[in-house]
Length: 400
Image (cartoon, rainbow, N blue to C red; front, side, top):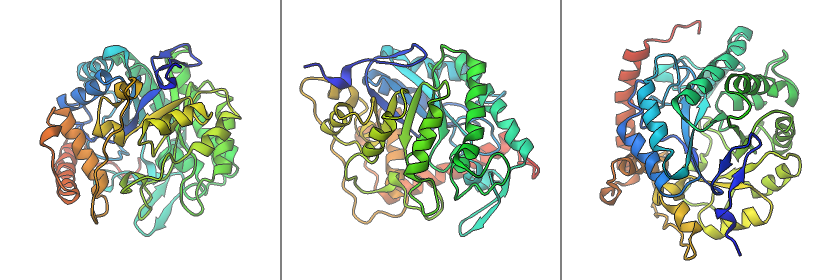
């Protein structure tokens, strides 16, 4: 019997992904602080391509510099280093792989040291304060995403993924916890979805019918008052009426104080398989599941059980960048996940982030940091890149 993970996936636009294993969009934080890729980042994505991934997604690529998630992110703006982006695209596309940027805008969750956060509605709650976007601000979004997508296309990336998950801006529009608007961009789920439809339409018009355009959405915000499974299923129905080529399902947010899936010590298996089955029943668009996959058997079960068309891996790809090749082989084998005892908040996420840095320099065999040491190193690097970001992009004016 053929291994389902090794079968190609054909997207609605006609593009072929060589297998069903995707490297999930993760914040690798390996940009240079001025929005451009580094050699370590290029090598990191090259390693995933060499390791057999059909598609690698670059996490947190900003469509404008004003509202970044972190200072180590790429910025696909007018001042981007196009030769460096072309080299990143080239190296991430070896071995028949695809590499796509995940295009986003952090909105209310913009990194405060280098931004003035602004979301769908004004918020002032513990740990989170932001202004509301004006209608003009919202109307500018489709153009910003379209311009970033055209840059991705011209640089040689195989497609783009629009980020509408994890509590960042487009996810904020979908979530009643963030979106209290009473105009046509709020209210019912169709109103909260409106800006996403406009973004997808503008991107599609910019890149043409044959270029892959995917989207990441939440199955749930995992927060009281946030996006529910019921509304998320309606989002899938609405997406079925667009030209999107891939729906990547994840969940959770980085709302201050919220438990982060990426910082959990262990998983209890794939997070969103049941939702994936429901999503596949209301759309013909290929469904990708992200979150909680640690073994090949789990991935096979999701494909064979009708929960997904492809599997997106994060931590497993960090532990073994060639896991896609391993899971397609006859022998198989699963990565060995580390055990941490009482790590600090954010420490597990930082450990995986700093291991990404080691992978990008082919030095993971020397990486032995504790979660606390990894968190310290990550925060020090962020602080340094904040200084670079300010010098490059300047102080954000209060009216933007």
